[in-house]
Image 1: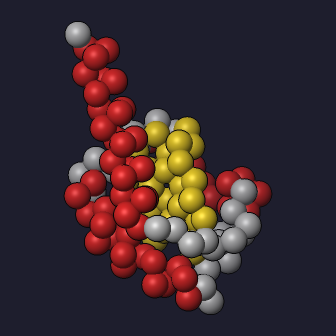
Image 2: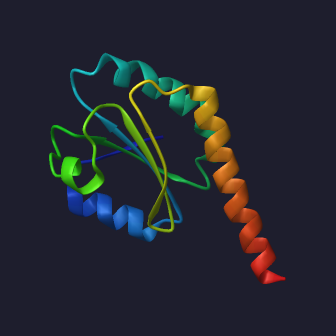
Length: 117
């Protein structure tokens, strides 16, 4: 589900070209990161058609620290139309994450429906 991204340019391009982009920032020695990722994948699987999921190793792509203010791991960012809509870091309750993501996607989807009327 998560596509591993290895350059800051590719991250920017993906965020700019997708309506919903879910970014999972991790680090190699982060046990929380490795334990949380499968839970996130399982819980958010229903959104894989609406959203692009990417994973970024903050050690391999150190520029993310400055550009996205990633100072710990894991950090989860959700971008909507290129803008940061949600940020969660370190200990992330998966059920809360699910509800927040669902609310954002449903809100944006219904806003588009209203605009068409």
